[in-house]
Length: 467
Image 1: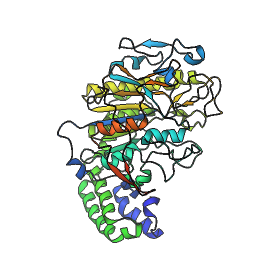
Image 2: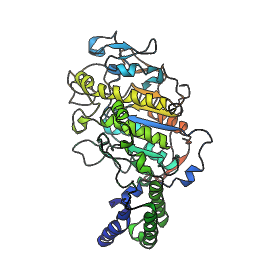
Image 3: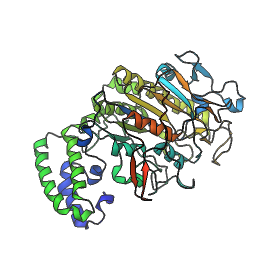
Image 4: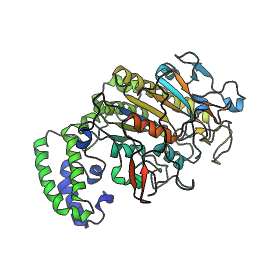
């Protein structure tokens, strides 16, 4: 609440929270994440609604060990894993991705993703925002100079179904243990934090997970909520001047909150409505249940769902999530591959079975790949002979659905997987491609509140030859 309530006297803040917004089960910080969707609904395509699920593999997976293997290279390059055939002749992937190998006909391996930033935070920023990092690579933490994320661009300029936010992030904002701020590039940044996507945060892998504050209860039905809305409107019109919040902004946030309640959006976020068999199909992990929730959000009409990978190593400051400076092969074989190989194919198959894959673009990548040689130093002194260091010069993006032709390889890397050989694709190109798919003009401009300049949503190009 602190961001929007700067300037409130303490007693007023406590009273408003407890006596006004608290009656709704929503705090002002929750309302600030929401955007009124009335104007956006009028601009919907006449055809079927398009969506995108952006799966961010935080930490940087090893492309050479997973989906751009080099079996004929020296052992120091090819590593311990062996390739297996997929259901597409001529395409192979890692032996520890057997389920993934059986949905290869739905997937495009874009092996030519590239940029130049080899530090986690700035590299995350480049992938999330589609822009080169603005400063020296000396911090992983957010600053007010951050470029706006794709999720925030969609929150401001995108479309969502009635009562649904156009952009949702789940289940967390990425943040390294021991650091006080989230990683750079995940929110509105210099476009303004008021344009942040809706953050659906929580332990989604729990069997009883639900989003608090968005469920209409029997003891507080909608007619009582409507009366409270009228009271809140009278309070807000008189007192928003104390909070440095315009009446229009306050009313817009309030309208969005009531839209969510009236459209029973809490039911969309409630994974308990899925069968035990379906939840088991995805796996009882944060990544698996996040993708299941992403499918529910796509069904409900959310335009962009950003899923940030989370696993038990999120609290490891040395090898967080897909980061493998040490013990690269056992971590991939015993932890990461089993989670991914269960959740991701299940997600693609579920979308396909429900007729959603054709209109839903699925994008999965990390902030970079890993070094061509085992133990090769590129950035981190934590790297040992059993690990691979950061490598942004060439890595793989997984694409599926949304008109992308499955069963293909796009682009190529050199014999050691170290550099792009043809068809390079930058984070800017991916951003432009995603926005184009979602019907957002990526050449449109926004106001840069930090430098007071006009900025295009993306400086990239649409990768148009994927169909």
